[in-house]
Length: 302
Length: 323
Picture 1 (cartoon, rainbow over the protein chains, first blue to last red):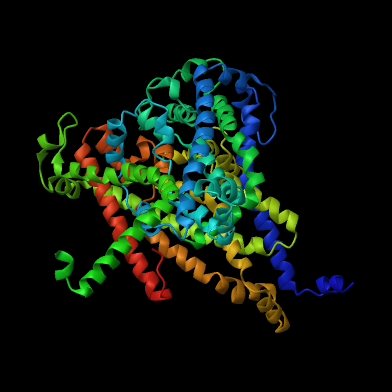
Picture 2: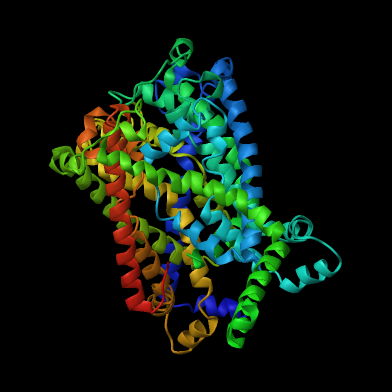
């Protein structure tokens, strides 16, 4: 009753604000979603029919042909496998290394704590740059190997600090009582602290997985000619760049052009874009409450 | 004997030193697992983050990959002289700074407005859905975003052209991505589209930290919701905005290259070339390694100076340090 009266008596300006708010938020939702839905519709639409235009968010001439064509291309299958593999391996190894280092930094009795923190923090501001790193990778004989996807980005200072600030919040007394029971530091890390840090680990796992899944530049720079190590993003990049007018990249060999004779390059682009995007769509909404917390945590710490 | 000749104070000092030394090693022994768990990663950080700094020596040489370090020709600052005399360098700096400033202005204004308005949504389910949707573009790669942007802007039935024609604003489709003057704008808008939702997280957290009592008090004083936004919400997140703004100064010239690499083409080259692309193309792809490294050094040194400047400003304002 009272709430109804309150609403009824709400000043005109408040009702005006509500309208503006909902109009703006709905506008943002449409602007964000429409391009994805449009690409989705085009990927399921007959490629000859698509040229006529007028497709919005529903396919007009439904077909699976575009997907059949791209999945008959061996480069894409390899790319998919490598992308999945690097995502899994990169996430697991990245999580273990970041959390292990974070654990040692969260221990007040660790001698090296101060030094390692500064040593690590500096890497956020100073970097050798593209060319020195390129030569390092070359000198380590990592070019043309799978390791180039995993090793260079293994320890990220940001990830370590986010996990560390979460671990700082776990009462130290827990570790002390575990010690009295005869547990060593590794056991404490593995059996006690790691299970308790799940929210922070979920956030970092998402960041690592998305970063791995989305990267293409390392493939371009180090494994451009290693066909067995190609990634999905790199294959998509090649298709996109090969059809852009006067692009500034030389594409090594675009096998994709052969298969484009059956369906139009536009439809191929749309189908690959969907294949690349869907796995992310399936994961991130479920981790939302974790990463929102993780982001705020990381930002507070700088 | 030695022990007899030393003074008692010396003996005391010696044993104290020994004790400290012994306790250091004792602690180290107790810390052995912690050392084992951190040492591999410290070595890793040294190799992948610090060792490349040694590569900066390349910028002072006429670097030939086949020669060893001792056989290289040293040329002093010649590479930097070439860099600062290169007209392309100034073009690149102009593009980098222009896109950086446009990115900062739009990248701050839009998420702040969006966060404030989202905060006014009282229907929790609707708010959650809106947030989930707005985070989506953050998680897809720039490759995908570049593909989507070029699809939306394309001349054959691209959505933007269709809408503009339907509104009667243009008679025929515009080739947006082939027009140099549109490039900065396209990059900025794409960036806002991708990161707008994600960047609201921090502002929404700051808004959630504002005490509800202030709103109650304002209501009692008869302030409507617009006045509440103006007098409570915005001042409440002012310090967050200032911190983020100052921190972005440190990244003024480190704007990356992905957007420019993926959205750019030869037609818009004069407006799309940025610092990192410059070092990639003129350094790596043309095998002018020393020159490319000089560009990398310039980038790093300017960024560090900007970071210290930002930190100095920040200290003055808040008496705290972000570093």
